Image (cartoon, rainbow, N blue to C red; front, top):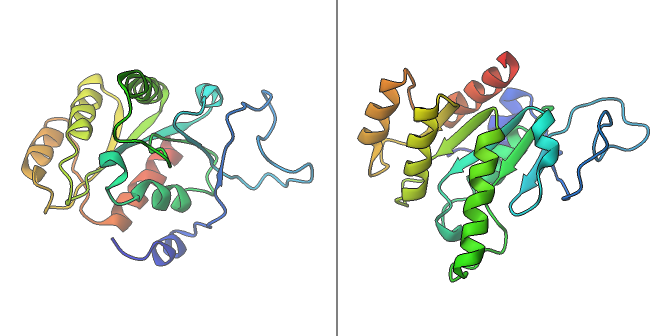
Length: 194
């Protein structure tokens, strides 16, 4: 993927994203904004395992796709920065300190967090890292396509199951992106339409 600074500049996107804390804001207020805020939008980024009740009443996207226990490229941070000036909630399942040897209870909590976040989100965004297999992401893609959820996919042709993704997406009139700039443009356009 290219330089996020160059891509964001082309889109007119700033890099002022913030990580939201786990406390929802009062209804009707602009969360995490200073008193003199002039209503310049700023995305609220909620990372697992933080609560995301604020996302229920706001436009939200879920960042599905390659994580691979933290070994996949951190595409979630790059995309969050690219979308940081939009009035949306970004639900990011990637944990900064994930333990790949976590016990079953923690793993099930993570799965539940992700499933609930997918359920309430308006759009589910997928990225398939060509250096990883990402079986959970494949499962979630099928789940979202089958449910009629709005989905946007970025999958380089070098991903080992690119053909599966391309053919399956085509059944739902969806074409996976292989160019990051077009992927980003599609996301911004989809947000503005919904």
